[in-house]
Length: 464
Image (cartoon, rainbow, N blue to C red):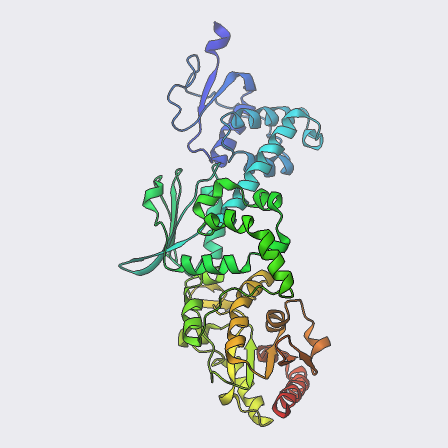
């Protein structure tokens, strides 16, 4: 019985408390407490160990430093977030072994090392799924719009994932509710809240009907691979996705839709808005990508509905988002100055952007421009195509690589493809040049040379 009474009960403050576990583990290692003598007590574990004491022994005054490789700490920091109640025992056992076998983590055949790696990989997948499948719904409160999401993580990842959502959605107020707890961001401070129920989250918002229509329109039956789709988007997450209940019917009709696409030459445009006001309203409600959910308002196209020329930039900037009109900031002034110098009248042009919301990084009171990703450009391309179908311009001017990608659907080298017209599928002529903001970033000598090339490109458009 003496051996049983010698056991030590060690409490962990929270399920994801890696720092607390590490401090306790260091003390236990220095005190020479073997893994089999420890009973780790998790929050809510009232039963505990019948024969375990409550106070871990103190480390000797001159105890040797505890050995822990960087590889171990990296894996342990993830593995501790796993829901397996035995994870703290496993981590301590490996840490104990590292004191006499410092190269243990290099032995990938070791059962304990493999077990930690498996826990860490499972946690990483769960963190990725949360980032991919959290869906915010807009809610009106006394302070205006806030965005609320419900998610059910498999592991204790909520607080660790909080930093990602703060970075991604820094400009909007949001809450993520889970059975484990909640996170609330007010634009400046991240707060924790108690566990929530599914009923605490909104069931939907007006933008979801639009998103469902868009999702159905871009669902490509010719590229359907059900096993791969379910692997990337497991069915357990479907109940939180507004588009999920469309998937069975879309899969069932995939063969017929693929045949129809072939008959139409591969085109499947979906149902686009039938007027520019309807298009602007749809874009304003779009929350398809992270930029649309960052708290900024969409900036619609501006100019005549039957314009001969359409000018496409990258995205609205700080000035444009505040005013709700494209190209009115410094880059817009550069564009207009050069256009006037070659006789190009932009007042008769339709001016818009490849991406309609302002992607930025908040730094104090400033909002610093961030370049949209290829995926974000491709997501917003549907709106640009719809606007082109309504306006039917004869000439399109793409300012920069993002605009060129939105129009051509591929990565473009501006320097290689500028200065010549490229025919688009609808018969319009596309000319690619640099974005005017590029000139603002150049030194004086380089700016003079580039300004001449930029003006020459605009002169080609004026002559077309």
